[in-house]
Length: 177
Image (cartoon, rainbow, N blue to C red; front, side, top):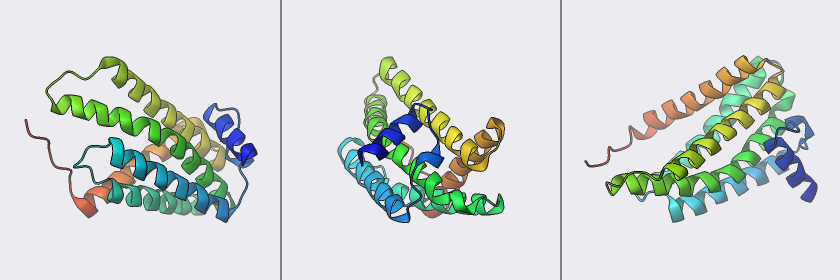
């Protein structure tokens, strides 16, 4: 377990890639469960009350798994699915509990008519950008593609996830002015 955490930290610091994660379906299931628990706890404690975090969580997990399963199959790299997903969900399990409270605080400040704290907004932006960079690095390594292709793949996955969420739930309610 300690060795796995070291690998995940190295992935976050861009020193290693998903190929260093054990290819274990059981480990992938555990990592997804840890990610789901982390999101559930932080979203229920720090997320906006009207946020549909449970539906968002199910859509995020399912869409990510299906999207990359199809993409890796089409790229003829299906054997890399387990390691790639383990790396992506392990990174999300670490980043999401850090980002949700920041986003909740920013949304609460905006709802209250107060200006959003700029340092908090910058930290949230930096965390989201770093998470994106890590996802691109994982995808680039898994698919053996150049960086622009990996960037497009990660953006496509996010857009597919957003489209699925909108189709299932509709657009989120607009906050009152």
